[in-house]
Length: 67
Image (tube, one colour):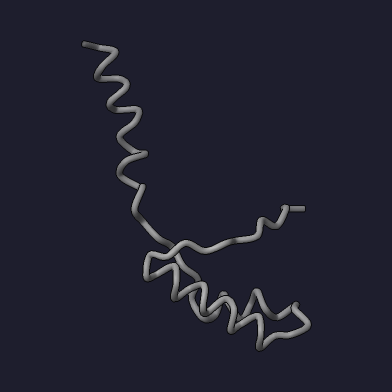
């Protein structure tokens, strides 16, 4: 019984945070695209991804390594 309770309490946070979506706001999009060569294309692309993410569609996100 003790192990069952422990596993339930251990797995509970994974199920609670499963359906939350965090998207970028306009300021963060402009901040990211500030370094790009084609700023307007970058902003347009990220805004499209933002809209698709909020609608629940899948998007591809490139992984940028942290230095």
